[in-house]
Image 1 (tube, rainbow, N blue to C red):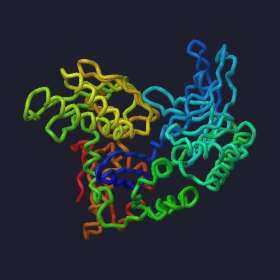
Image 2: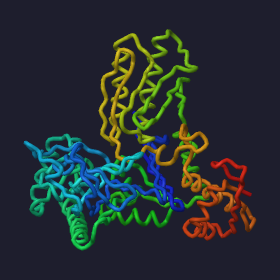
Image 3: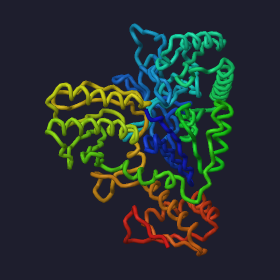
Image 4: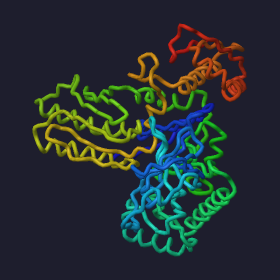
Length: 498
């Protein structure tokens, strides 16, 4: 069996961070964080209750963002969502409630409360909040308002569970605080447990101290950015290397590893090649494919992905694949390959919510079962929580996948003004970042002291408004004069660089 080669590649641009995870050279996961579009999932706020809606058992809480947060009564009563990015399932005692009180018994308008974002703002909906704050570390999640102790269900060895249980029982946690042990803690020494717990307790003390001295709404604790978050949650023993093209970001990651994972420091390297890092690893072309509606399979078949606000529909087609024996075999082989690719695309695009997959009809029950098994097996490597129903006689599979953030497409694209929202184009931020990357490549390749850039007026206005943050650093890096000009006739996603 071929050994899995896994790499994490980090591209730190001007006001944009992109992280790609490769397995045997193939892009399996992709994350992006752009300046001005930072995610608030995991952030802790001191908020103020703006209004209460008894009919739906919820309150709207002002946390200082564009949209008020949404707080269900269940998110006040019980710990329904732990703040763990890799979405481990945890085994822990649950506090059962009999006659649960109404939202009006728990909260009052004008009341200041401590909340955490458990789901990003999506569409017209504001962020979902919870009063059950949790602080995720590399190996432990500290739960300040829940005294239960838990261990990840993914740690299956009885002797290891028993060893970890003994350690956490003797950690002497302060009264009222609990913790959850993550999957990555397998084999962790007692000293490492103690060191990480001390860090998380200090972090909680700082948040609590600040909460007592500021007036709501106010940000109290901010989740890591995309780079450190991926390193914390996905840099495991099966990762061969982490390669970073920014010296500052490289130093930040090394400092983080020194605190939590000193044994993995040697696997992090700084990339200073002349070719852009994503081009060097063949990632840039693969990223463009992520946003295509149709994906062609190796055997000639295809899958079509349609995303709407309510659900995602995925259709499987044989296309050019005609097989070598009979129609049933052709359909079966196409569905098997499609199942593998669908699992990959769901992770790659970070698709969440309700997903309906329409495989090609299969007459044989055994074939349907094997397609189901293939889909389940490939989805098992997904870090997000999901639930898959059995394939129907007509080849339809219904599934749900945890959605805590916008999908990759929704975070990088916006409704197209040319077709009044019936399609999508890239956002100004995404287009501007692409222009800056292209300009940097041209500037470094040319001997001229000046680079002229023709762009759509909307992109020109965006870049000029952010000249100090984006253009000045770029000119300094390239040591060239970069002159922008408006081109009224150019498509918003295109540019002219000379």
